[in-house]
Image (cartoon, rainbow, N blue to C red; front, top):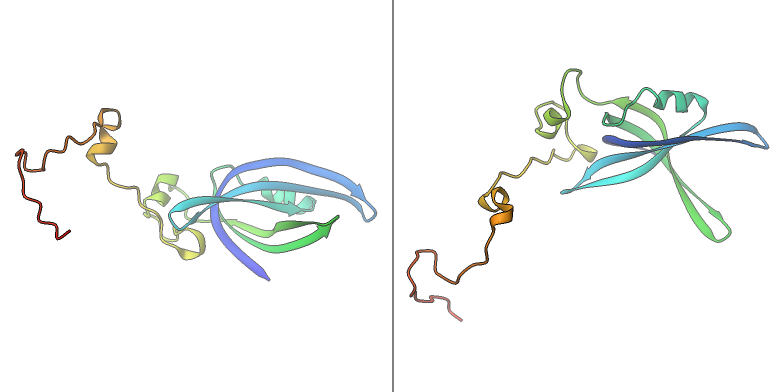
Length: 154
């Protein structure tokens, strides 16, 4: 089963190489951050083979990409290990736009994971603007008078 995900490359780990009974191999892992609801989520993905490792070199940390991948799990000594193996990756968006443009939704196709809408930054409110100057409520009603009538039914 082939799956796709859009996100931002936040880290690239070192290339791993080795030799097996089938010959030499190379593998590289990278971390992709995507939007899951209101929160960013990260997943460790990998590419196998010299050609795929060279393809991953084309992408930089911070690039927005669409990755096509397969999931597979295998058991070894009673433990299960899952691979998120990328077999195709391409940049998302048009050249000349910044990360801020994507975050603000200014670029078409700037949607997050699986077509979810781009999360807009929250507007600044008085508490955020004066984060260090916040004081606890005094118990005085909003109108400023010291007396008020409670109209709650309980």
